[in-house]
Image (tube, rainbow, N blue to C red; front, side, top):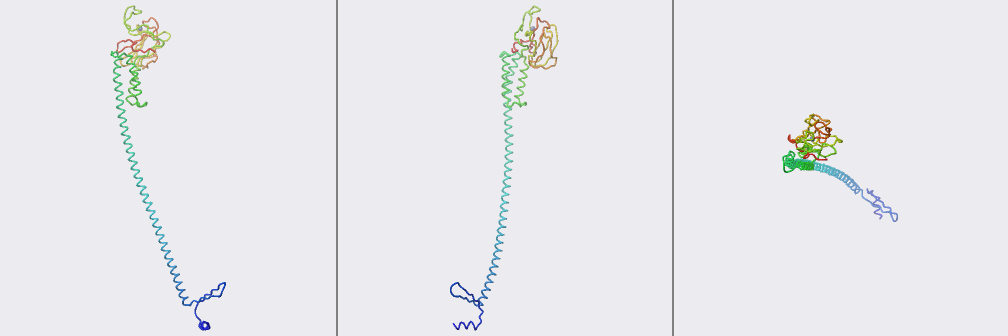
Length: 324
Ligand SMILES: [Zn+2]
């Protein structure tokens, strides 16, 4: 113990002492030699330097790596976006092409279907018109008194049913260019022109009929070219059919008279008139008031002498007029 103490005291040693002072018990001392301390310190310093360097390097590497990853990610993101954009553009382009094809296809099929409809319409209209024309030729023959197959009245009924047919056969109400519409107008005009309208009011009594009769004034048998109708109390005289006024005047037999040309070979004559309100060249409609009946010319009282001429030949008006 003495030797140890002297050793300490005789030789001043370069050492480092750590004194541990616990709360209970004696003081403990840890002594570290100086060189060790130096080495430890150096090592520690080197370690710290190394650690620092390593840390720095690592952090730089890490940072670089992070940056690189970030950069890579950015690049990847950009590439992804680019790819997405390309996809989008490709998609849109395809869509556009598809749409264009669809539009072209649609317009083509529209043209095709329109053509088909037009063709069907033409065929259908031709069918209706030819059916009407076939029946019209019979009616026209009848109307001119040249048919034994049917009377004018039967032909008239058929004409009316034909008009109903073309009316209902029309594909469109306002298509004024269609053959059926034109046929309807033609038939309606024909019907309007035919002298069928009873030309006086309130009496359908025939005072004197058509044909050979004892003349009331001349007192001998002669042909009566028309019929005598009407009452003094209802003096209005109407056009039997639509047409053009071709003659007006006054003579000893007819007194004041009017002649209307209805076309299709028909003319009507109105005689013994007290007055008339039309002039040559006027177009009149069926049922239009044209005159007042009277007692002019060779007449025994106020009445209307009415004639119908078919192709220049006086014909019995009763065959044509419809009582109303
Ligand atoms: Zn007469």
